Amino acid sequence: MNILSVEHLSKTYGKGDAATRALDDVSFSVEAGEFVAIVGSSGSGKSTLLHLIGGVDRPGSGTVRVQGEDIFSRTDEQLAVFRRREVGLVYQFYNLIPVLDVVENMTLPVQMDGRRVNVDRLNYLLRALGLNGREHHLPNQLSGGQQQRVAIGRALMNAPAIVLADEPTGNLDSKNSADIMGLLRRSNKELGQTLIVITHDEDIALTADRVIAIEDGRIARDERRRQAGARSTELGRGSRFSGAVSTGAHAGTRFAAGTRNKAEEVR
Ligand SMILES: Nc1ncnc2c1ncn2[C@@H]1O[C@H](COP(=O)(O)OP(=O)(O)O)[C@@H](O)[C@H]1O
Ligand SMILES: [Mg+2]
Image (cartoon, rainbow, N blue to C red; front, side, top):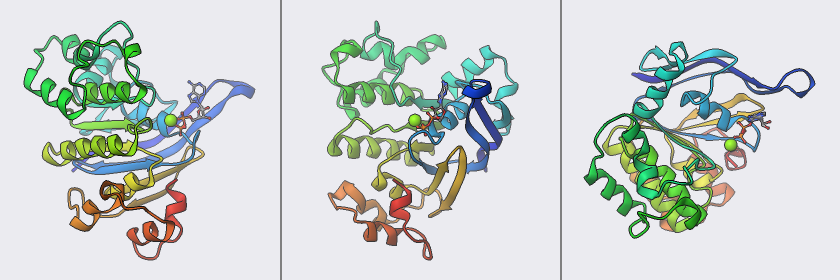
């Protein structure tokens, strides 16, 4: 079943001479439970795409369907409810509320929805994210990596069907990065969550079910590497999670046969 379907999505920022076509007729579908990596150079439109899928911005044209429903046919208020309940978005630059502490930031979407905070889940996430002892720190009292982990905790707090993460390990060292990806993938597997991760990290892209490369606002490549959820032990053990160094040749062999220079392309 397709949980997500992106159809002819385009987005232009600005007008006239200053206009930037950030997304240009992008279409693809994602099956429930899939783990998709989105790769591409800086400025290629990756964040724009993720923000549209997450309903934080509206497109110039095209549609995003989640569970078959066109999210942009909703009012702004309905779209806000969609963002709180159906997706978990980890922003590239965190977007934490400066005057709220770690726990308040993580539980804000749940509170705004007027629901009770699941304390067991909160404690599980604080522990898994290495934020124990930091519960009442404000964002400016945390390192960049810690802020990134709070943003991830906020996105996972209500166990959304779709997790959208924009370079979630961009500010983390390799140990923390491996832990965070482990948490996201456990969540993907155990809760059947659909996981869409923008990454510059070749090793992360190599562990995804599918890699979509964006160039100049268009899909340059869309490669399904294995069925959703069917992670081979070889791939599970591979990559930086075991400390292995991925050379270009080594990484290239992990892509589907017949493809070349993929290690270059996923950067
Ligand atoms: N709010 C904005 N206003 C104007 N231009 C923007 C805005 N956001 C992004 N852009 C431009 O759109 C293009 C795609 O940006 P973005 O989606 O952030 O790319 P990526 O995440 O791949 O680095 C870039 O040229 C960027 O400068
Ligand atoms: Mg970006």
